[in-house]
Image 1 (tube, rainbow, N blue to C red):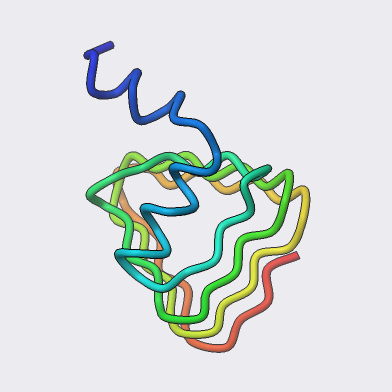
Image 2: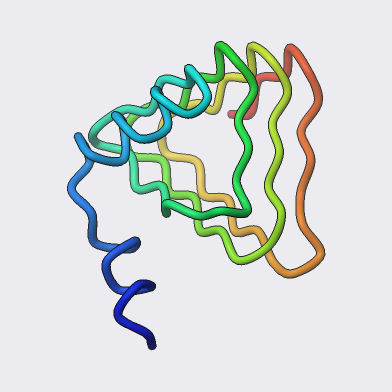
Amino acid sequence: MKLAQVARRFLPGFLVQWIYFVRFRAMVSPRAEVEVSGHARFGRGTVISSFTKIKISGPFVTGRRVQIASNCFIEVGAGGLTIGDDVLVG
């Protein structure tokens, strides 16, 4: 595993929250585990709740106003995943 991968996986929650808010205006709970990845694109107004885990190793795109509820686990492989606008994942 490369140093950059290790750094992305173990960033504190508040840094991940800040990165995704600045880049996409998405709200990520500091208690969620979301990998920082260049493959990720979140639509404006996306909300990722606490205790959710998202592992990203391929293209991951969410539409606007997507809500991912607490305790969800999403693993995005090389094939990618696209979630449309106004979707609730729970």
